[in-house]
Amino acid sequence: MLELDAITAGYDRRAPVFRGASLALAAGASVGLLGPSGCGKSTLARVAALLHRPDAGCLVIDGTPVRGWRHGAPRALRTSVGVVFQQPRLSADPRLRLADLIIEPLRATGRRSDAEDRLAELAPDVGLTADLLARRPHEVSDGQLQRACLARALVLRPRWLICDEMTAMLDASTTAALVAAVEAYRARTGAGLLAVGHDRVLLERWCERTVDWQDCLNEKG
Picture 1 (spheres, rainbow, N blue to C red):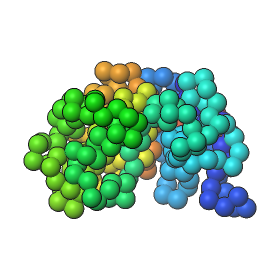
Picture 2 (picture 1 turned 90 degrees about the vertical axis):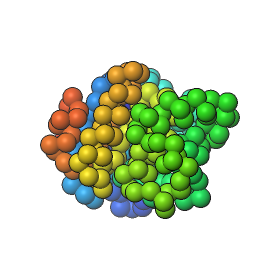
Picture 3 (picture 1 turned 90 degrees about the horizontal axis):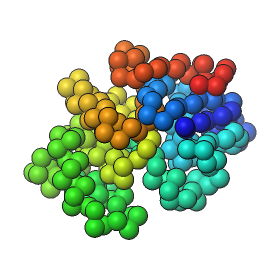
Picture 4 (picture 1 turned 45 degrees about the vertical axis):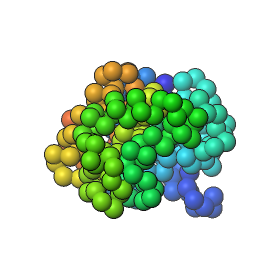
């Protein structure tokens, strides 16, 4: 279970982006979080991904309350969550080839020996060919780069996947391909999914349950 309980968060303690947001995601389940731009849903997603410390409230992952954030969190917790952001060019090192971008988390966690095998597994799953893997971000489209960012999020085999407006900048065919790749991974591993977005049709087709942002502020997910 991934549980966000009464989370208050923002970037200025005197004026938080939101107060008292709660949401629960069962193991293996898929939940869509629907809300307009600027409401705070991406900030909540960053809290769930252990990337942003909330001002108040509690995050519990697989029964373990989170006490540290970013590199202050235990490695086992950090690597249990994979995240894909809306804008791949802001989350990708422009100096890295796509192959190196994908296996970067393995190197960071001392698992370089797994890199070749994981790259061979993931590249076809997300639709990346050998010639694309050899290119750098400025040499590929947004959709191709987002495919690499999804593969990077999956490379450590996370039990939880957070997709924050993952397809907002993409065309319909790329959106369908990335959603299919996520669902294939979930079918193999039983990973839970939190998909954040403002497209109700997409979220309701993709996820088992869709929660309106306002409902997160009124009651537990």
